[in-house]
Length: 424
Image (cartoon, rainbow, N blue to C red):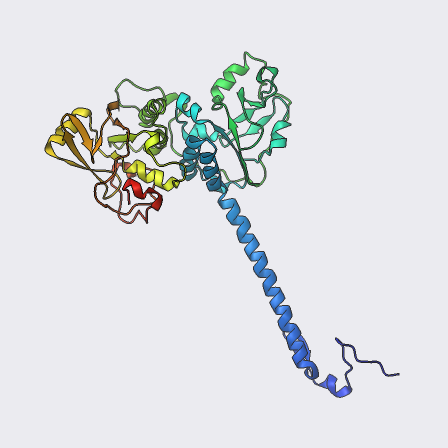
């Protein structure tokens, strides 16, 4: 009985076997060369498609991880944590937060920034944990549990007690137990205040039983194996150097900027204060640059729809690299002087209208809002904008280049969202 040739394995005679050709990618039979070639081509296409899908998915996962912090910044801004969003955006450049595969951030409210001022980078590390704590995990942490932070050798302590009304508490600060943001990599929780510094926690623990000692047998949350790379620590002032001198030069000028920032925070200049506090933290090279900041109130600055790079540009367009008091500005106004800001090509014309001092036509409302030997701050109800079209501006770096002017080529096309404000 003759069997019907199989669709995939046709009958071969002796001659057919002699004509078999073995190829590097398999073998083909000459009588069925076209079919085999077609099958091989299909297999090749399937294999290529598989690798392309795998490659795209891999890139997508990496891209998701790399943009988590950027997404968190936008969410913070939209959720009523603008100060923390700005701070995180700037701190990311020094703390290299994208290097961590997982992060948990505890974000104080804008009111906390107004009350306590801008945190240093060292204090910012105390608000960040190199591990992901989903809502359920955070809610189930036992009292006294330790949460690792980016600040080396310091951890946060869970301090739940009846006096917090059953709410989650860390370092005696109430924390929301539902995340503001969670993309699987970065988790953000709102908190009533900044966490108490490690020094104060240590002092309190010796006299209060509400915070367990570091030798407690209560379990601690380990740093995950994925978080093995510790971002480099920037040069910032130590806690012992943060007492402000009385018009004398400090060891680190960050002290002076922190003091100015605190004042601005309390007067409704939160956005400018945030940038000012973080602007020169790494300026410890002994450079004697003095600056003047023309600070518009928050209501005058375009809101949360604006890109954060635009906020940076706005700040740089309101800073000049010289110390100018009210009396100096009056003198320059009589001379019709023009000031060059740290934003290359962005100039401010000083003039008088009667006895009112104008900067590019914008009246100065709060002269000498803050003054010391290295910084002067003057307040405005409006942004200082150009009368004529000036240099295109866009993304710019955060530090003031140790007092040097902005270099050419730093700016790209400026966001059209600021078109009405004349900064394009």
